[in-house]
Length: 193
Image 1 (cartoon, rainbow, N blue to C red):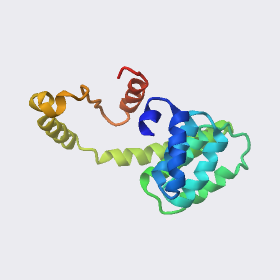
Image 2: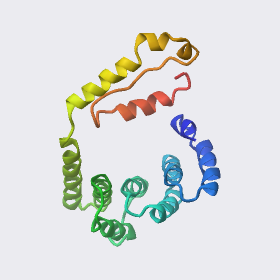
Image 3: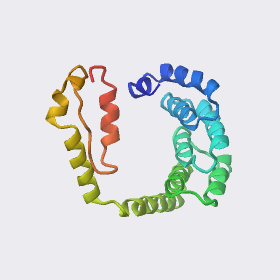
C-alpha cells in the first residue's frame, strides 16, 4: 500500500488499505493511510468518514488527521462542528504535536472564514509549539547519527555481494522542515526511481 501511495497511485493504494482495514479494523496506521489517500484524491466526505474511525481508535492523537481533513474543505460558517470538536480536543491533555496540528487546522479554518486576526493567533500558537519541539534539537546528535550511517553504509557494504543485486540507494537528508519530504514525494512519483 505504501509503495502504491508513494508512487501516487492512490486509488490502488486505497483498495489495498481498505482490504486490510476489514481484517484489522482497529489498526490506526491503516486507517490513517486511507485518510491520506482520500485526501490526495480530494475526497472530503470519505476523508471525513475516515477521521470518524480514527477518532474512535485513538481520540487523543488525531490532530494531524484533523489538519489533513480541514485542508480539503473551504469553511464558510463559524458554526461548523469541526471548530467545536477541535476546540474540545485542545482542552484535553495532548502531546505537543497533536496540539500544534489542531491549532494549524483552526488557523486554516479561520483563514477561510476571513477572520485573519484569529487565524494568525492560531498559527502563531502552533508555530510556538513547534519551535519548542525543535528547541531540543541537537546538531551534534544529528552529526553522530550521520556518522553512524556512513559507517554502516560505507563503500565496502554497498559493493558487497549482499547488496550488489539491489537497486542503488541514496539518502535524502536535511534540517527539519527544509523540504526533504517534498523532495522525497517528487522523486517517488518518478517511475524510474
